[in-house]
Structure formats: C-alpha cells, structure tokens
Image (cartoon, rainbow, N blue to C red; front, side, top):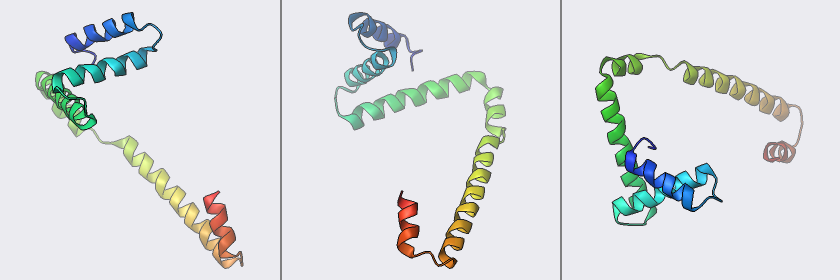
Length: 118
C-alpha cells in the first residue's frame, strides 16, 4: 500500500516526527492512523475492512492495466503448494508409523501422550 501517494507522504511525516520508531513501526502506525481517518472510526474491524477494501481496489486496478499478464499469472501451476502438500503427507505418514510402533511396542499410553505434548 505504500505506493498510495497520500499514505507515502503520511508515512514520511510519521517517520520524521517519530525518529525513534523503526521503519516497520512507523509504517504500521502510519497505515493504522491513515485507515482511522478514512474510516472515521478507530475500531479494528472498521479500519481493517477499509484498508482491505483499498488494497483490493488497488490490486484490481493494477491487474486491469496488465491485461493479458493477469490471465498468464492465474494459469500458472501452484508448484510450491504441491510440494508443501507432499512434505506434509510424508511427515504425516512417518508420524502415524511412529504412533503405530509405539502403540504396539508395549509403551504405556501416558508415555506416548507425554512425548507428543513435549
């Protein structure tokens, strides 16, 4: 969202007047106060909804300008997600095998539970 001109200016103002804040702290403070002014409310839900709405509009405008690139982007396979799922399946399989071995090796259930909680 820092590409929005008024927000960028406000972020610079906050950083200048509160130099003890880190860059991220200044950004979050600027973003939150900017959202409070636009939402005319200070509730978390109101500000978050307004900021999400602004981000959605900015996202849609950006992708409308790109045209064909948007279709290309949407058609790309999600290989990272597939790899994550494979890792989860492998870990789940190993975990269940370990539980099965522990259950049938005579280890008391309380010890299995204790090792899972630890």
